[in-house]
Image (cartoon, rainbow, N blue to C red; front, side, top):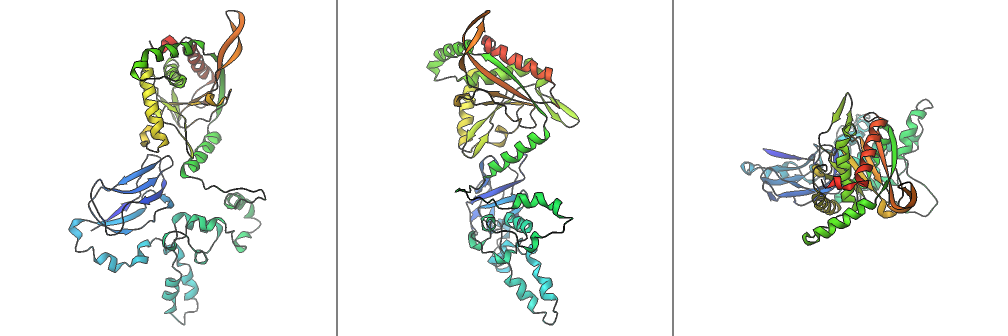
Length: 428
């Protein structure tokens, strides 16, 4: 019997994705393990493998379609035992009928044809002529704006209506005149869907799935997580000296440690020294971690991602350096597996290389804290009760007050500062 291929959940939090590219076509034979498509999630473009053997008899979602919900049927294959049935499949379902999900929402014209009643034969003709092929996202937008899809010319594959075809179309005037009572409730939705308008020369850049997810998650974090911030100034001279000595000793192995590698190690150890800050808020529970997995913010084209250094509290600094080099390279190539960027017990974000002195980062739930690192710079500093010059950086911890009280956050910041100013403990 036919086997339905459904949009997979490529990560635990994935709800929808973009079908970026089909690598098979109708009539192709596939075996278990063959790559069928490329699917764009919120963080990466991943390959989708076939798990069954058979022949592709239908492709139900065109490549380039956005907002495809997990579990949606995207293709159909028939197994080797169904070869006799394979030719009958296209015959029973001609090409336009492959996209069967589309006609259902467009059945509204049927009552109009049925009202006159004298000509029953006209109803099927009306339905057939009004059949519209549109992506799920386009249908949703059309529903929000009240746009009749039968009046829209599609620019997608085979005339398929896509989101871009609706972006420039305003909502019909009739739909824009709700009752006075309903107007206040409808205002936020109308504002969200209204097209942007300005006289300033500009370019509209379509948001990627990653940017949409970043916008949603950070908005939720700032709206629902009670942040508080603690900042300490940390003297870096001893850490810089240790780094130089370690790099000289590791030169023969091709290892070159960065300051960030040592900071990851320091945060991992600090979390174990202040375990009340190595936690997550989970409704009625407080999750206490027995390991420090540090998610490190990495800028990539179109957004950012946080690959995770697992067990940073026990890994050697050289191992952390190798992990980060590999993770950062694969992150920029969009090749990270979900478990390599989802999770973590705390995060570290470093903007020091851009000369940023100090900033406050947004917590990445369900983590309970994130450390924001500023630039190391020469500053006046009191050394042994005398004013001198030292290399100093500012570090700011953002904490979830539901899980970490102020004193607990302060203990973590104190441990982090101590480890950096007396860094031999990082290699002990």
